[in-house]
Length: 379
Length: 221
Picture 1 (cartoon, rainbow over the protein chains, first blue to last red):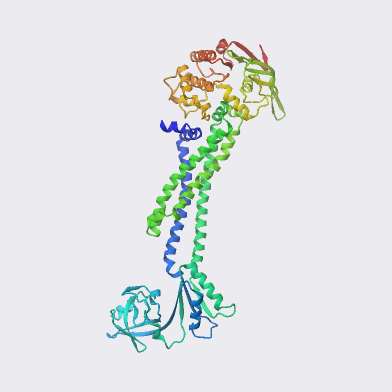
Picture 2 (picture 1 turned 30 degrees about the vertical axis):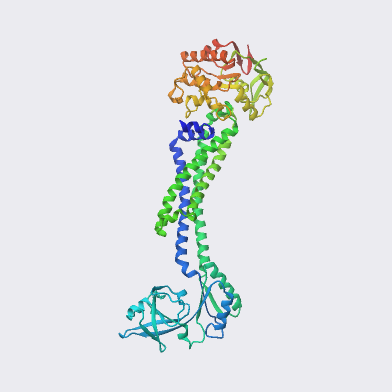
């Protein structure tokens, strides 16, 4: 009774609510259409967010790197000291890490051999994550070796390895960069490869993918022209492409969701038209006893709005559950679905549902309100 | 001064090539405190005349006055305001809203008017028509006679000057019809109403202060 007396202050809402209650099955089915539309929009939207987050997490390590090597038109066999200095002058906001590489065979005291690629680098800690041992700020005398190789040759931290006649003590273990066991990595100070004059690659580590892209562009314009590719500058660069692809995917999925909401609003249009045609005589009575056209319009619009809000609310709740399942499956973290990036789709879905319902209710409401009372009373 | 006045009123319907004169040169008045019944065979123009008096329809000729004011050329919104403030309607089929209780149905005409609270008057009117114990019943829990009493209470909620009744006893048995007419007669005096009823029920004619006969759109007194 208290709800009714509160509603009494909003007669359109009271009348709309009572009208919806008259044919509960029809109301429920119309709302179900909206629920399906909202769930389609929300869960597809949330799915793309989950996929995007997962993709970004996996690509994140690679995309912020710029790799520079000698270009086909270069006169030198590698990247020169001068070019590195110039890069350092241009790129002030990221670390420039020149490397020399070679290959060698390591031989252990137990007689076993391992083929490894040798990298001479000073800023080793910026390139490698150590699995054992403290990361040396600058690699001056020791060496880093990949886990697999160390195991194969039964090497412990502190053990010596020999390369080009010099002995290095192992300072730490790193994950191998070669995935399928094609040998391992040995990382030594750059002085160890002193007989190679030039650097084979220069790695620049930027803050993120966008910054890496900008650095790549700057280096490219500085060192290269259309005909003369002095340096080969490669950025992972695909972040933009991946992002673009995900944006397209998300638009396509939202489009599919949108279509289902359009279908749902056509259903609402139909339900509202049917119910106003059925209540033609009743609306005639309302008009006869002095209810204004605008009041009838408001009443029927409120009905459509309530339908949309009801369907939208249930749809948003179902979508939240669906979204959490999706996030659990795709990223393994169900609570990430509550983040604004994905939960905003719930707000959009609800908003679209209400807006679509109001639009669908507009024509039946206008039609009912403007019918001549005499015609309407005739039934 | 008459509350309701028709002068030379005609209503012509045109459908295709055919023209039908539903009413021709009708003069009619109704005063406060009197009950006028309009009788006549089906198709004689009774409903058309009631619709014109009730400002639900516009005449093609003549003038319609309410409380001495010419309302003939009122637009739809102005006519709605007049119906809201000065007129009450009772229908043959009661036309109560099924999802509202008796008291809510009575309050319906003033429902959107949030400036006044007619709840007490609604309860009072229902008591006066003998439904004080049926306030929160919905129409499907009421008998035909009770529904028509609710409808009468609804027609009076806005303190109208004119009560318009379209076959108010048409769907009721003789006894119930009699009690409804007693009710209307009593309220007519209490509220100082002009009552205009259309019917072909002889019983209703007995209650009338005055009878107007319509034949083929023309009045015969």
